[in-house]
Image (tube, rainbow, N blue to C red):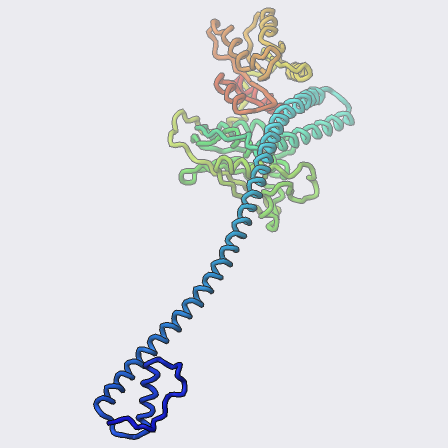
Length: 486
């Protein structure tokens, strides 16, 4: 087929793309409605392929443009993120700097607190000794004065003064105990200890007080050895028995111990006022007291000390109570796996057995560095009928003993003495002095206003009994008679 001479030429001579020329030719040919030749078919096929290629190229260009747009967006985002990271880094550095400053302040505050606690502990130790020494002398003098024949009015005044001294004594001991427990100064020393020995001592402590109130005080125990700190356990039971005697008007108090599995449960029963149900959850709180019409003394810290000491030793405390019928408090203590050297079962008739030797027959040696306490103690012992020699040091007591041709029946020694020789050492020297007389070991008592672990351990190592100042006159008398009987 030949080309028509009248076919119009392209209007835009600048269009040189073969694809566009072919497209124009195709349009022109399609407009002529002439039968296509093989050559034209080939051209059409080429045109179709070129269109496909063109579309693919256009798609690539578009995707490339999109990628460039995305890359630009990512670039902008990266810049923003970098700025945010830089800002956060600065904030973190500032925070770390503030934290270092805060830690430095906390470290200084901790050091200051530790120094304060150390000073507090030293102050408590010194204050407890300095405050309890004159209080001990006052209690002993009041006890000696109460044995004098005085008018009923004077006897009433003496009783009130003695009661006030007892209240002060209890408050001071309680405050010292709370402070030492909170400061971590008092730490339990778990050891094997016969259970009935604790109950025997507590019976001697409280029997006279109970009798003065017209109450019966009974004990029952088992010949078992427990794993505990005897000082902590005794203090726990002492607070429980003191509360029982205080809040019981009539009837009595029973101290007992019964086995429950691998534990020995100490129980303190009373027939007192009882504790209302709505106060059960608060009974062990600090400064909480059961409200009644008679007793308003004390700070309400006795059971708080019980809780702290029980927690320190790992002993469980529980109680039950009914208003108008009484209460029972229980302390669960582990039984030792080694049950050697068991003591025969103790009961109240044994405690109430008549004395084989009275204080009137006793020769007592007293070593005490405080002149007021020494004078008051000697006066009290003399009122009880004992013959007593006193001194403030080992050298002075040796001089006094050289003037007496008699072997001492008892020794009472303060722990801290003027010549810096402790009481157990003085006891050891006096015992050694009379060892050639082939008599049993001289029973001895160490007293101190600062019952630290070392003081108590030194007394135990020398096989001495231990009493804490201020000494209860009734407790001292009962202990001395007991030692004379042994």
